[in-house]
Image 1 (cartoon, one colour):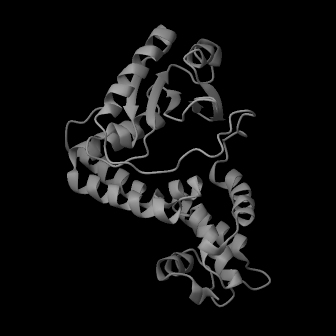
Image 2 (tube, helix red, strand yellow):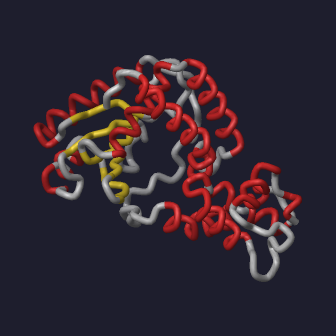
Length: 269
């Protein structure tokens, strides 16, 4: 059955010490194999890999997994992939939101400026920095038409200093994890913005700024990323989490290149 897996995944399984002759046997099911992959490769072992292993164990393709299958696998993988992430907040779900990639729109910069002003007025000195991040912040890059905004604060854990002010801009808290909060519009409003609150000077803050600036300065990488996004949105049209995780290898590779670029130049977060 391991032959139903693509060669790249079988190579990664072998590198993780998985005996392919025992794969999908009584002691080495898809979940156990994925955990070994995760232990060896960290974030490079994604939900998409778990889908592929589960599907291969049944002799089907990943696209044949049912929505129920995918929900079960997501629930199982979530505490492993995101150990510091709390359950999403009740009432913040947004079922049925469009999941699409659009050509770059210069209006995205204007949308950010509007939100930046609103957040700055509401948060005052509680926000040490408000930045446009994510794909809509990179001119020329195809993206989901959702503005990602990174708000830096002295201490994410001190929610009393900023959370109610951020929510007053027409946002609801979606998710908490160590060093990061996510807010977005309530279900009655369009999903046009995500606001990420992080600690000033944190790796979260730096990583997103570096990724943005590297893409802005490197057109070849930007074009490759746009092409990948268009390919993946077709394959994972109905599965936002799989779409996001399918980009992981590319994103981590770009971040490695960006770190070398930052060290050799004058980039500052």
